[in-house]
Length: 300
Ligand SMILES: O=C(O)CCC(=O)C(=O)O
Ligand SMILES: [Fe+2]
Image (cartoon, rainbow, N blue to C red):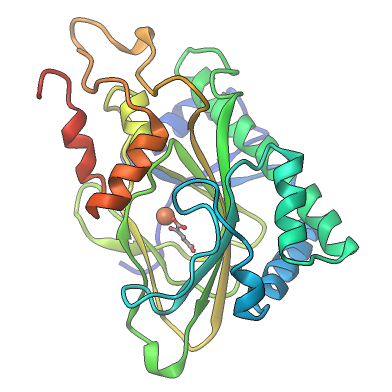
């Protein structure tokens, strides 16, 4: 197996890379992006802020209350004892970002970094969503109003935990996830669609990883692959990652646009409300795409 061959998409080379992008969505359910215009200095500054926030005492981290399922502080649990995360529901809301900063007593410098980064990564999400839509022959602003949740993750790996899972096998529930994975510490693995084998996604400093979630399969009428992935502890080092989850439209349900449905490609899924879908996954424990089967068209 060795090094993974997750496709790399150059965001400055469009529309030339449109076919490569769609093929990555269909065959891998994930890809790396380069030339994304987020400065390396901002990525590094954000990483330092993430480390500082997740190193805060538990009683402060607990002030990061969630407004929707799983959007606030997640402490280590029996199932995932090595993992914890902080987050906020709507990264496009400056007010939500400011309140996140206040909950955690962020310094003026940390606030500035978080505000800049959240703006930049939201813009990147819109750019990537737009490029996917355009590459399918659709309008590039289809996803403009979609809610993006933000989460920062810490994995407290020790010598005793090498070989154990940091996060169990799952798919992401939304349309797509943009991940600044740890540039030094590996451990993320994605399932190869054809072999079912988990392949390491080696760090690639300066890039972001994009994963497609369950609602990408729904939106694309079954064309896109909701990639299963996990994080393994490979070494006794703390690992950090920063994620934006593009969840779904604020009000409307997620469904395949009419252009992706015809006689040869009948509609595979009924419209799905993304918040309900997320809650269903959490309450049933169906975290690896199994819940999609409940929404097949024609089944009841
Ligand atoms: O930390 C990572 O690299 C991946 C995290 C992840 O898969 C998730 O938060 O859904
Ligand atoms: Fe994930």
